[in-house]
Image (cartoon, rainbow, N blue to C red; front, top):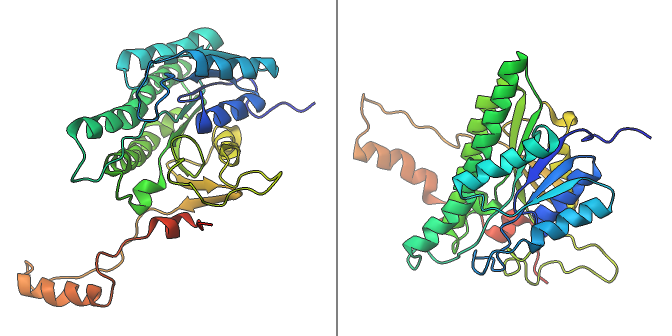
Length: 314
């Protein structure tokens, strides 16, 4: 039997007790990786409720029952020390860490004019700081190993952004900002760690989970006996690929993924360019150059979320 692509490698998947994270942890294990299954276990998608060991331990048990190796971790990724302990758990249990999949997050949706400071802070804290915390300790581990070996080592980071960052999401200014920050963190990390043999990429997944049950309510419901086009199982194979040796040249990229489709997103391009006639622009000159460019465009032009997502409501 041919060796699995992730055989001999170890991984951490955060937020892996349910939904996307669970599917990703199962996929990495199926491909041969030993997995630290992290989930803080709070029942509310807004991060509310009593933390529980149940979700992480259930997924770890599911992996072991299928013949894989898995260890549960029930700490909070947004806590710097607990993130350190999680990375150390992977190293102590499996000898090293090779793959980090950051997926943990919460939602506290509100329009910008109604959002409280705590609603803003909590989402930024879990998503953006949570990604930083785990990445920081994993990166330090890989840098130390690379210096000791005098050569690059194996490292893969897969971060979770969102099309809320790409398309805008009126009721999610905190979430959209956090997901945009994750893309910036990813590209910076990719540049910093490439020389150590580490790649860092981000995905924008579309999946029907408890986090997105409102967003996708009524969209493309599966027929009898059919797999939901928005099932997390459509996303996890890309995560497995990005975590594998086959993706060694994929670095600093942003990919959109959902039912049977992967799109590679280009970096922003310049749409138009204007040069001043003199050393400094005047107000009048800017008005004469820029205003005509937007004159025939719809007011407040943005990409509609449904258009960007390519989804149709029943």
